[in-house]
Length: 301
Image (cartoon, rainbow, N blue to C red; front, side):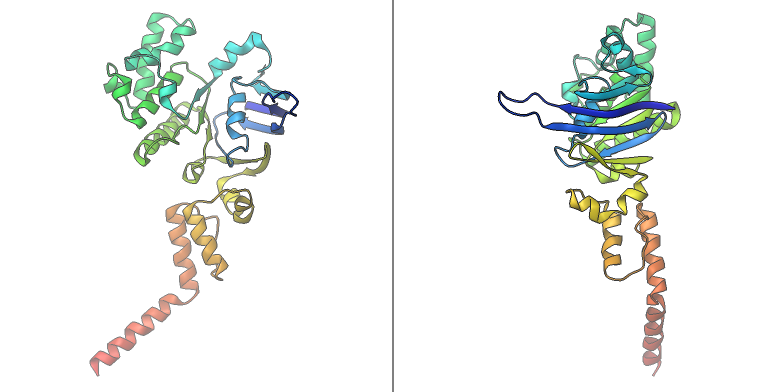
């Protein structure tokens, strides 16, 4: 079933007087299925963050259509239904934290949706538990670490009980541990609650975790497929200013040197196994064994 669908979606920011509008999104056609994890990649200016803001009607199309389930985002009458279904977490958690106490911040969105007091209490407790922040209920958000703040921001979105969560470069300002905390939370929500996840990111290791990778270039879909399919296309990605995971880079360099390795081995374990197999096929193991035997013979003599 479809969660999000863009049909010939176009968007341009307002231009100055006498200037022509430059399209940021140029006839994008894209469908995101319910329950999936999709990573959207692209260089700066490719349109990926603009696309993210179309998903819950922060921006409206300049042309074409954006659908959230059966709802047209251009229809003002259904804006609340759209925001109920799609929640967004932005790059800087400080921009989303509005209260002086964690639980009050998480309760802010459902309060504005008119949820009853008893239901808000349940949602706040459930959301904080889901992101592992139950022990910080009465803490001041500004005293938390970056990763903890971002988890509170995610909890605030979860308290709305959306069907889809969009992370717009939500880990960009975090250290490796904070990034790991947020990604673990997102994977758990997808697994346990079936939540659709869209990750706008420039971190290739985050994209590895997705079911599907969509690459944007100049406001258009450039590549679309499973991570293993996309990251094998090293030349195409490099041609638009993107890199590949370190594992794929290693395998690609070895392949360029004539070693028969699979570029689809993107995890560390798969990469190590692929290199070992290639070395064995090249007879490296036999050569090492022969040298060891030779050393033993020389020692005995």
